[in-house]
Image (cartoon, rainbow, N blue to C red; front, side):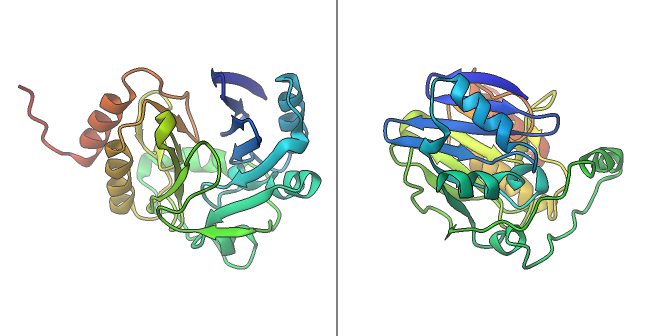
Length: 236
């Protein structure tokens, strides 16, 4: 696992497939996603390497119910007393009570999907709080949940308006170029969610896959959402 410091209060944990983020408040730590089932110990080690205590992890926000995003959440929550938060539509999947809807794959996504399936299965994981669009998440000086369906029915972005930070989960990807995420259950809804997230105008955008976007983020997000949606953009 690689540790990348994005800002003094924001750090990224990069795994062989996917990544998670740590946000630092004075009164505690928040994880946005938690990697796969083997990620708990590396996350704890990285937190200690930052001079922080994993026991200060107060909450884990799961952006959606795919195995590479919540595999270690249950172990970390049990060990440190953290609250696990997810959107109400993906919470049953994370708990193991319902199957995840299958993606509708484009032809070029097929070989990528086979690679994604090599991530270990995630165990059923408790969800302590189910949230919906616009609900406060209790960290980051006013972080709010943004429902962004399309990748999964209950995909969730996390917006920190006071800090200009946006966590997109897999609704948007930054691998090679900024683009709508892959393996979507509903591509049209995913594109609409991409446009909505771009309209938030964040200065720092953190993806589930790919490097964080820290330069001209608002403009890049808008141009990328317009491109993927096939919108005609007039330039003055």
